[in-house]
Image (tube, rainbow, N blue to C red; front, side, top):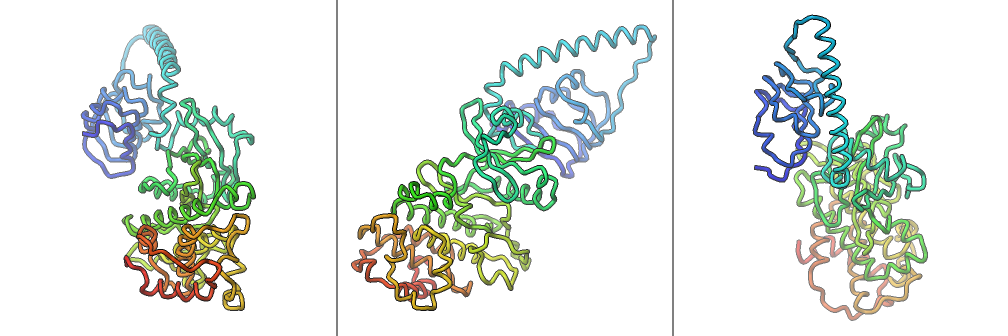
Length: 448
């Protein structure tokens, strides 16, 4: 009944019995992977027309359908128990038939290749339906678009790979995160790669970067994302011209969007997803300065029946303090990181010095003094939003995890109507702000 299904992967299960001929009735099906199962019986001849078919590592038997090798390579039957009907005849006839058959295959391949080239524009343009480990079509497109990952197309380098910009034949622009060759062979980095695929294929949110596909081809591993024109929040805040363009209204919306995405991950996904590396580097901005959370390589799915203890992960300066001695992942780890990012957006720089000196005389500072001085002072209307953001940020930075608010409460608080604030930011001290934050974290949220 799945009339729009183009890719079906049922590999590595314990499926037994015969292959259903009805699979052929899925008209747009381009890829079918039934490898590593316990399938028996013959190969239905109707399946040979599927572009990408993998039947390897099963217990199929019987004669291979005519024309199978015209469309599919031998590795698709690897590990298969096949019984091929023998043809006993005179040697000269065998040689003649061999040449005849070889000539037919050659001509058929030429015709098939010509048809592939003619349909390349429509097929290769739709890279967004490719989710397999072969990725042949995707690979050819990417190699052509980036000239084999030439440095000219590189737009950034991270801990375990480089990011490239690629314009596909269809005109779509995507971002590619390609593992370096050394990292591609490292089991730890490969697990992060697979973890990101697993998480991002399960979630959809307007403030979470979209994964279009992934490819593992000849040792080349890369992820295919929607392209974010503005790059990372970290880079924008540290570029004077771009930071000036990021006015107070845009900054507040970035913080709100991040909160909504985290609320979705923590409270609407089953199981709960904890990102573990929320930082300005992992928040990307599109052309409209909308914030999208990225880089789910260290994300963890919380198991309610487990202690959820793990190794330290994250970016220095954003990691919750309790994680160093408990080694236990909870949603409150992301809440703390969100608080750091929220202050960073308001201040235009990482709030490390402020956080380490809050117990000193810096509490006598006024809220307006810590705001990004590159921007003009906010008007009263946006100042009210800034006050709310700052209050919530300090609540999220509470040293005790249980005293931090839930992201669901933070998200709902940002959506709730506000009473007009008559006190200007120039008269609100950080000491007052922290007291208000403690109240908010305890019982001050109207919607929690």
